Image (cartoon, rainbow, N blue to C red; front, top):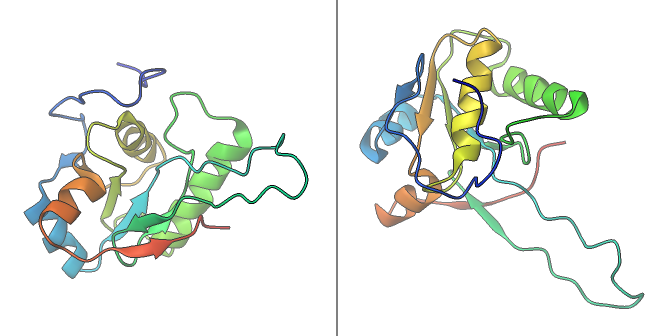
Length: 152
């Protein structure tokens, strides 16, 4: 009934009450129709304890083109600032239109997208789609991906 609080990389359910669960073909249709796509994959920051002069290369995230990447917003419990970041990001992605379709995704077998889609529903978004196959399913279908950076 609540949010998933641990083991985020595990098989996900087939449904999410209140949301439309979409296949890759359905996600592609929504993408072509101009839906707001929201990636919630966590972002690994530069480790704080790296010795000075250590070269660190950030892992590249490939997203569905046109997406907004709101990292770390799919955890089961969010700090107030992270929840505000999600709320502001959704508002920006939809241009304030709570009836606009939002497609929330991450990777296949990632509870982060399930949690974030569920949370979007509690924020009064009326047309929330959860894309459980995420970029894994999108890539497997030969659809385009582009390099992403976390949204400010």
